[in-house]
Image 1 (cartoon, helix red, strand yellow):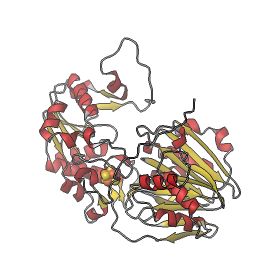
Image 2 (cartoon, rainbow, N blue to C red):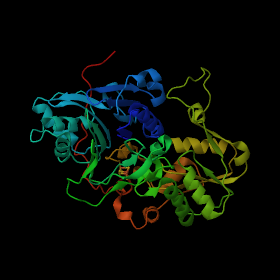
Image 3 (tube, rainbow, N blue to C red):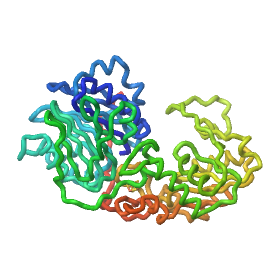
Length: 461
Ligand code: SF4
């Protein structure tokens, strides 16, 4: 799952800070959110479908006492949109209460779940995170939560950046490849851990460092303790966090997201110049790359597409249906910028291609004379199994059509993507430490042999 996680240790307003942290991480998931806290004796939690600001009112936050907290924002993935899958997952085991939040996908959750179910285990969600919970609860060799968690994580494969809360401890862990980000910061009082540094900026926390791939950090009364319990491998951090997913004001994997994204636009301008009068960014994620493209090419940048930031999940269309209403409600073209012009539109990626096609039609209708499309990442040809919600190979346009065929499909004058080599130049010196599997099909961790088709047998009405 694409998600955002946030945790606080040792602050009297742990729930409020976690709420703000999740608020800053809302771009990582809008389906639902949850917070669990502890006052040292009891765990408290609240979860709901929807946006952070709607779920956590003042009244709700007042009911979440304690100086420890973890929280989660969940991305909507097909077939799994169900309140039971919201996190934190909360459970009681032989030693007390535990809450867990997870960003990433495990690649061997299916066979482990099948074996556990055959052994009598009962699952309450269809998330692979619950597999970790079962392995944790069944561990008998150690009484300590951190040792139990390390033992459980030693059995799973794939991507996880996760936080676990017990009555008295916060534990943070990142898988050995470090697919998903996880950073650690300090407040005047206490510690914070989260998916991205933009969450620290909002609450005035200072970035201490990234939690390293393969590292487990225990926060308890003596401060943080670091463990490296797993065999060391070369990190394979998700390059897509830089391309699209992370917020540009975050600092991840040792780099500023904005700077890397802008560099991608500069490389693209070198590799694939366009005979255009204006550079048009696709809001919002295409903007830094468009700035880079404009800077390197010398072509002025204009805001030819405006995004409505206040679109909710549903909207009511007037009964007299309006042409291309669905596209226009999110993005609209600025006719005065586009009319009669040859434009180069910069976007970060093309997944299915259907939205881009509609956008190009909208620009043409607004008067663009020539449209050149430049994409600041290579063609996506393979799905992600480590936590980014890309569709199956059948639905990925670049897995099925040539670049020329995509150009025709989009109805534009020219189309170019950033090359893989160009992308690697944007993280020069550390290019071997990133995962590029969705562009190459070469997976650092074997994908699951079969996708488990899980569903709920009981329906809440
Ligand atoms: Fe990121 Fe692509 Fe690797 Fe998934 S496959 S972790 S999206 S780079």
